[in-house]
Image 1 (spheres, rainbow, N blue to C red):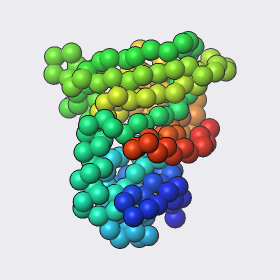
Image 2: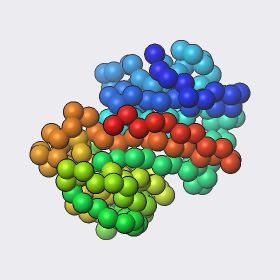
Image 3: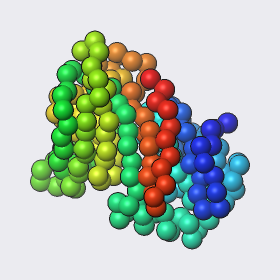
Image 4: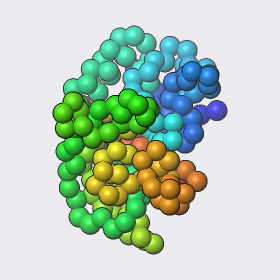
Length: 197
């Protein structure tokens, strides 16, 4: 099963649990898209979340809606807000502007690459502090693979529970990645999903 947050004749929005792939993997057929298509056979993928990330995932209903919604993502007309818990004390707010590229020898890792990386920007804002950690909101202005995870790790505040980019101590501090897609905004509409941590 998968929790449907919203459905209409154009799109379906679900709350993807952590640990579930967005689309089929090389050896794993169970995924969010398969579960959504079991309910809405015409549903098509528009964007993805990392397997370890939970939260709002949008699907188009049919090819025409997929083209329209994919264009909205490409043209940055879709607002996305994430909540994360990061290591250390982060105060205030800011913009991380660091180019990202695949770390080919260590795939699926990505890396900051000033020579070949694609422009990547993330807005962040500190919400609260507890036990040497900071709860933040993150707004990706671009949509690169692992963008939020790489950006936060690069500035010294890796996301807690991140087995790819955090130190072993920070990775082991939570049984899951503390990153959740909490909000989507499109065409004047807004959907919110409670943060499970």
